Image 1 (cartoon, helix red, strand yellow):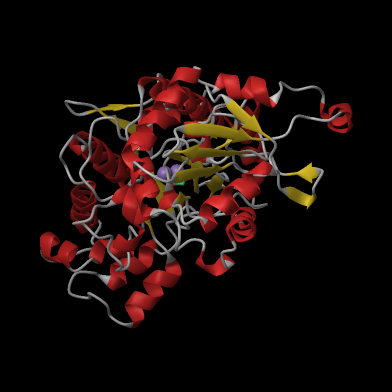
Image 2 (cartoon, rainbow, N blue to C red):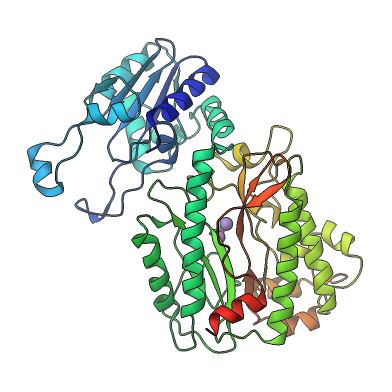
Length: 463
Ligand code: GLY
Ligand code: MN
Ligand code: MN
């Protein structure tokens, strides 16, 4: 945990911005994998971590703004618990670590909330993303489960986004740690990937570093020869010479700040000429996109810049023809770049995504688009100092998508389908780093960037 004052200050800012009513922060529960006592690794809710910091299941916090009280709800371990799990600090001690003075048993939350709710007071809560939250809201407030998300407090969502988007110095330090561990994982990936190994063999080895560093994976590992599939997970598939392997892996620290990096490396340690040319095109786009990240610039404009550079680059491969700006306006780039250029990152790999992408990545004036390609851009708004984001351009030759577009002769004035046919089995490339927006521009996070140029990657692979 950070110092208690940090959580206290965050809560006091939260109170002064939300102004009135009751704020309910729900911690997460332990979830059983196949039965309760054989559970998934516990993961606390990120907003609960941000405002309270206690990384334990079965907790709740009520911040009563009108009466200026803060209460932690949770239960001390009984001897029946202690014989299985060992002793633990008391709830009173935990409350002290986050500067909350009042502690009550967990079940006391029910009557307090019910009388406040039925007394007509406003209860601010966040949209539930786990069934356990929905059930609690149903039980505590008598709300039908299907309306809980709609009844979430927009005021609370907006306030939390307005705070968590701007990373504090101690958070940036944690994020650097997450990137450093993730960078080590990528070095291990490059040293381990070999023809004859399966995706799972390499992924399992690399994932171990996240655990041995004291944290865990920030998201399920993507390590694959099928890099064209955006979020495919490692499979029991043998890697072959001549293929590229895309590795999108990140660790989260013990304090749950996420790393999210991607490298795409040749399985046998040497890119083919075509792979090298394609890789260098994506690298040039990534460097230009990072360079463009500065306060005031719309991230969606940087996404468009990447799309334009991609189309320009694909002209030299004979895949694109005609005017590149017109091709971009017609969304021709979405045949090759179906996702967004990046996203906010912090306590969540896609930071605050559970609060709603419109609130996190867009503004009142700028609505998130719904058309193919653009709908997957999670961040469109103007960048500001303190934002931490990913920059992850890529190229993805998805055979099924190409076949669909080709069968409709879609944008045939810009796309040379007969040439494209030759690239249908090329796969995919993504390069991803994390960037902090500063007053003057940006800084790539991490103390040691994993190899990124063709020469750097081939050198480490052939060691
Ligand atoms: N690792 C998932 C992503 O890059 O968004
Ligand atoms: Mn990412
Ligand atoms: Mn990623």
